[in-house]
Image (cartoon, rainbow, N blue to C red):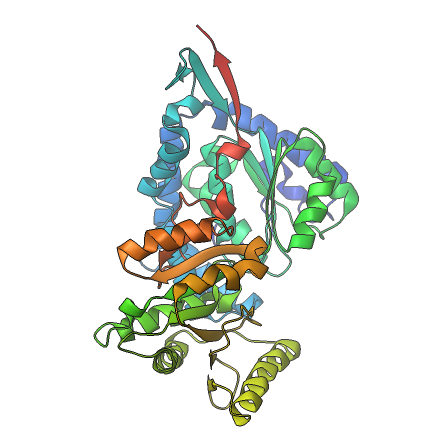
Amino acid sequence: MTWQDERPWFLPPELEGRAHEAPSAVLVGEIAARLWAARQRALARLPVAEIVEILDQVAAVWLAPASPWMEAACRRIAGATPYSEPMVRTGLRRLLEGCRKDALLALLGEELGDPAVLDGFRPRRAGGGLHRACGPRLTTHIFSGNVPGLPAISLIHAFLVKSASLGKPATEELVFPALFARSISAVDARLGSAVAILPWTGGEVAVERAAFAASEAVIAYGSEAAVESIRGRVPVGVRFVGHGHKISFAVVGREALDPVTVETLAEGVAYDVSLFDQQGCVSPHLVYVERGGVIPPEAFAKQVALAMAGLDRGMPRGRVGLEEAAAIRHVRTEAELRELKGEPVQLFASEGGTAWTVVYDEDPAFVPSCLNRVVRIKAVTDLAELPSLLRPARRYLQTVGVALSEDRLTDLAEKLATLGACRLCPIGRMPHPSFAWHHDGGHNLLPLLRWIGVED
């Protein structure tokens, strides 16, 4: 199996000849049996430190100069999705740079303390006795297609807890999961024998029933409705981890509006908005800018617009459909009408198309974006207003990009924590969480684990 294989599936070697078959409960059952056996034969016996080394090698082959894996992925994803090839390349490279050895070890240390608990019984840090952690023998992953590359993280999580994986790629993005599985197999056949990628239509009850019944864990990504639908079909006793719809935004304090650094700050906002056209949960929908700085909020909005235009030249937005283009035009028309009425609104937008849109608006109400590089810059008198402004969206809050002094950052973090936000990071890094981040406010490995203790 090589990067040249364009098929959207990756099956255990013994079943490769069955790949032409339509997905069925019988085929899923046979795949699951092979994965269980491969896990028991090799993956479960590997020390977690060796698994980390192998996964680091996988990332390295993708990040190598002129990597055929990276080249194939960027070309094929750009051809099969609306995203531009430069944007895919930027996103995949940054994502895989965050999956290197140090990051994997940091995650294991953060969540487990002693990663060797995955290899055998180890002394407990408190309470005496011994304990060890066991991952699922098989995890089914239901991937979403909004951000290419994210399936790598889910598969790596499963490998770190010594779980075999059955992945269902999204119909919107069939390229990356199978290609990544092939790269794993090319680096290490033992890990490659414990992963399968099988595309099936979402909601195929018999196929999903077979997959979920054969699994000890299910990880699902998608819309809130899709995740809840999957949750309802997962059998009792099978661990379920769901990641549904979330919204992110950014905050700029008055002290950050410095003429020396404002251009770099605006470029950071533009990058966070533009990567994968705001389709990720970590992409900002709007930016709250505090009054009272050397640079007023409306001038900052103009600076963001200049940065958006510059970024579009090197990393152009992807294609949009008629409905998406109509939504962007509606936002622009509404802003223009409000501006004509004398309201404190300014529109900055690309000419000759809908490539990017910045709306400066002094109405601080939280308004989600229609996405595809449409961002609102909202002026506020004081950041103390944020908790009341954000309350209507508290159920969906996730990442907050910040440009604040350190003393104010801690205070804001305390307030946002009560509203459900789970990650604050510098503006310019919003699309690239640490591998050890608290995804949706939880852990990444611990929900997959079962613990056994031996008391003194």
